[in-house]
Length: 391
Image (tube, rainbow, N blue to C red; front, side, top):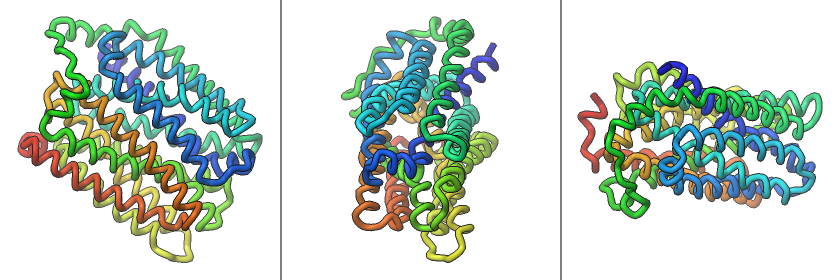
């Protein structure tokens, strides 16, 4: 039962990752169909992230009231319905409308499952959980590339929506499996809700929120604009760029699988440090003004590889740094802070690309990566958990 539940959680995170890479891979074609500026992808992304922020901040209350399993089922269904809505959009404003339920569903499941795994499973499983998110993000660009080649972007969204519906059905059928950890929770005293204000007063939390903001600003920029960057700076065909954009997600997925193998040995803080070094190597490869496309394409893979351990390592260390009784509230706020980075910084780069140059993308990513590593280092120092986290 323990292994079955873990597989169900992994499947849920595949479904969480499926929609995340769709917009970026399809946008070069969608932009032309809707006859809007390239920066308008940022507006859709902003609305999605806005919904995610709201549901993340409410995650502690929702999870305590309805339970992790019910929040998970409802969230996956909401994203499935929203994706199908995207496929029916005939005007840009319709994308904005359907972005609302997608964002609300994504934030609730993200915060609930991250806290659940942080409390009940090891660092290895946290890395592999986010590895399965990467599996979802890898699948989507290939689905969209296939759809763009043989039909339309609308069918790409429709196919992923049907996959999400299938995941929802599986989750409903396997609801009884969640009882395995529920028995353990019933034997423990349920902590009082910390709330947003209480969590913000805990030592080290503000630094961590800024660090998470920086990380998601960098990650979301790469997710949304890689395909457009390859098309506009490297003259790669739109269909090919949609497929090549998956290399960033392949890097994240592979990196999180490898992180799971070594996480217990290296510890969360060292994983973040190593990942940052690899990411910066990739950023340099993308920024180099060479005629060949190979180094640039490989650079996006390395950025994904380097980013891989950052998110799960920050999340997994939260109960230890700040206490298990505070983790759901803090992780919910972390998700909100992260998505604020996604909401405003990725669209901001769209404005920069539209008015200055999309060639600034690697420098933009580098700035937020530096902010992330500086603030996470301050967090670990402030909470004085170095010896325990690093083993």
